[in-house]
Length: 377
Image 1 (cartoon, helix red, strand yellow):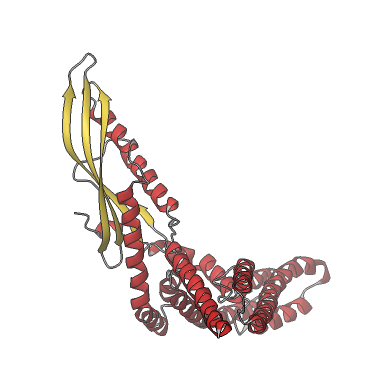
Image 2: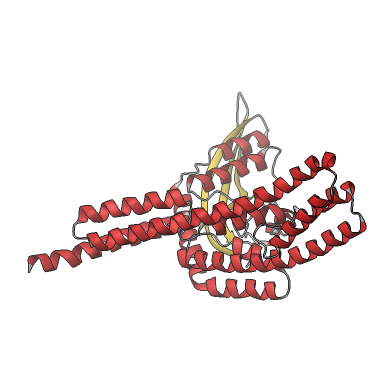
């Protein structure tokens, strides 16, 4: 009877430990961008940079460093002068009291998740209020209890947001892709942080599918341009132009074999003394294809390793707590090696996301969120 009781208890302990750790990881994956809005009273010279540095410290200290690809969530700050005293000398001094309010907000929905206030005081020489202002800002403690509580509250609300809005976000991205707005769709999906495993994995699966649609459509247009160019200029200069055109094709596109065939055709047409230049371009294309093949190989090895891990889990059956802890360590190690959410997001998906970000960076930059629309009052 004792053994019957211990076994399920160990299973429950292991599950709760893993669940608690995953919950912690979910929260710690959130990223915050920083923003200092226009103040009611203009900031003195140097104050904005000082505040930005404080915000960056708050974000980084709490594992929430920002990302240009995910600009949705922001930590901002406003400053209000609440007291000013002239301290008789000698020497004459100016003392300022500032009320500094920190906010965590959703810049897309124009929603404030949480705010916290801290009071700081500074002193400046003579009637120099600017020095007193800067002295006060320097005294902001980025590890203040109120700021830490603000971050915890905001984190939990952001996690709840993605847990409840995930399906809606993905459906909206799919709708955009059907309208031919592939980059807008991919930005929306890529902006989903991995704070919720199930949502993040769904987003990456959808992103792969939409990215494939995008590169396949682009490939057809590129190949049409390449063939037209070659037909009009069947010489070394035409080959050089075609090579540049073809090398913009993703190695994952379904029409990639057509590009290889066209390259082979061109190779046969070129004169021997000019073939070396052409072969260099051909090699660039082949290297891209090898990159794809390597990603597939790594993905297959990752799958086999995980099957082996799962088989080992079944054999051990979590009979002892020590075995469960050992298995947890093995999973963490495998996650680090795979470079993803416990390996769920495979190497092919990561490579596709990387390739897309490189080609769509101009689009991403143009779609930056306008934080000035947020109302910090």
